[in-house]
Amino acid sequence: MEIIIAFVISYLIGSISFSYIITKKIKKVDIRQHGSGNAGATNTLRVLGVGPAVSVLLLDAAKGILAVLVTLWVLGPGWAPALAGLAAILGHNWPIYYGFRGGKGVATTIGVMASIVFIPALIGGVIAIISIALTRFVSLGSLLFMVATTIATILLANFYQYPMAYFYLSLIVTILSFWRHRQNVVRLIQGTENKLGKKATT
Image 1 (cartoon, rainbow, N blue to C red):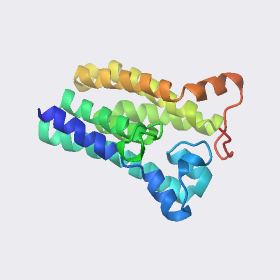
Image 2: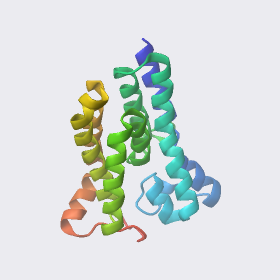
Image 3: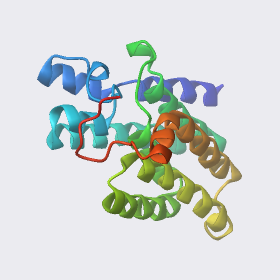
């Protein structure tokens, strides 16, 4: 029962869309109707600029951190914080407050994974940053972050004594990330993906 309660609360926390709130506050528009149509930090950068985008990135990541750390503190390591983290990501992607139309969960995923498996997430983060710096494809960096984090999690599981639930979480979130970025993957293959700093049209 405690895990179910943690899951529901984490989902509700994850459902808070800071990109929607900040864009409505500053520009009086629905961010999902501008730029790429995605309710996240990258599209906030396109619509509002660097400052609001950084705020959205940090706040979205904080949702994942809060969901995981509170559950970890109350229920301990294992499936409970893993499921709470997944719930926060699901909330961001399909928020109950906004007609289940959210973002792709990148920042929230970063917060969740950094809270669950910090060193693997750090490795994944470095790889993602290098990728984005070289290619300027945020979508590619986001996917590489999850792939690298998942691989590092299983390789370091024994050394850091990670519960297997954390590896399964990484695997599930990786699959979810590819699903949410499926159109980006197609555009990457076709060579039509939007680069960082370029206004999106789809």
